[in-house]
Image (cartoon, rainbow over all chains, first blue to last red; front, top):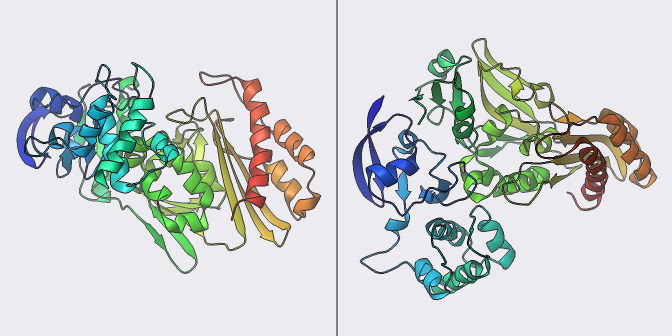
Amino acid sequence: MKRDITLKINGQSYEVRIEEDALLMDVLRKNLYLPGTKKGCGEGECGACTVLVDGVSELSCLMYAVMAEGKEITTIEGLSKGGKLDPIQEAFVEASAVQCGYCIPGMIMSTKNLLDKNPHPTEAEILDGMSGNICRCTGYKKIVDAVKLAAEKRA
Amino acid sequence: MVGLSIVKPTCLEEALALLNDDTFVIAGGTDVAIQVHTKPNVTKLVDVNGILKKGIEETKDSVIIYALTTHTDVMESPIIAKWAPALKQACSQVAATQIRNMGTIGGNVSNASPAGDSIPALLVVDTKVTYVDAQGEKTIALKDFFTGPGKTVMNKRGLVTKFEFAKADNLKTAFTKVGKRNAMAISVVNCAVGLYLDGDKIEKANIVLGSIAPTTLHIKKAEEYLFGRKFAEVDLNAFWSLVFNSINPIDDIRSTAAYRKQVAANVARSTLITAYEGGK
């Protein structure tokens, strides 16, 4: 059954007609043309679909869009301001943390959740904070470097 | 999309009237959004976010955790860190950050997985659970709540509203999880220990293992062995054998019975030592 809902995404209101059990991930990508949020495993294991919900990282593949009504959703598209990248995005570019790039939007949203709570994480805290995000290209060293650099940039 | 309807009741009575074998209660969604794919009979999700409470409160004698409290809320709570450190440790080891931000403690318990990480930690502080069903509100010991894997006394017709445990100055707790890796992995074995102490004498012991039986289990023989004993007089090898001989785990997708039995006895012994020496 179709339902009309209003979602608040990146500070903007969107009215959208969706299937009642549509997942937030699919609504973002297919209905609202915000494809920065990626579909990976679709089972809550890989973190590619991570968005911020009321400021904390959650998985849009495990969230029905109708349950996101009334909440503030932030996607990777909402981080840059006035054409300028967020310091976390800059850090990922500068640290060359990106190979294929598919996991990176989720990595960046998890970094934001981590640094918003803990601006100066230890390496162990970084590894724990990023452990819900999987990269299948290569290792995680440059991703950890990017998180450290992002923490410095935000200081 | 599997054609589910998602309803948002506005009061407990309305929610309870919707519950039957073909509905799932949904809060954080981290289990439910997966389970619906293998349960074709489920056609309706009852979203309880608007009607249950979230948060942790400290009263004069007890700690109350409301059902919608997330794992992240639990692990960041100074009240939990003070009165139930094993529960803080358990919630910190659930899956990874995003799941901990979404998943609720009410959901973890109601889901009644034998591998649920918060359950042993709640049991060792002698938690009571409060739930509502058509007959009204009931408060029972959490150890009497589970009837099988995925099954509880609510029989899919009730809603957990809160948990409560007494603040005990003489209680020391610890928790250990064994999984295939740290992040995301479901427990192969988990263990929590709670020791009520009078000096170095154990007044009461709770030794709880998860993922080794259809429900999370108190190891009664090991608890009886520790009862009234000074810690220095505990024969740790005898304790290990009591645990080893008390359990009869199974082979499954995550591990083998033989490995589970060995490692369960090992972690029960090491968690006992950690609780006494390092717990608070």
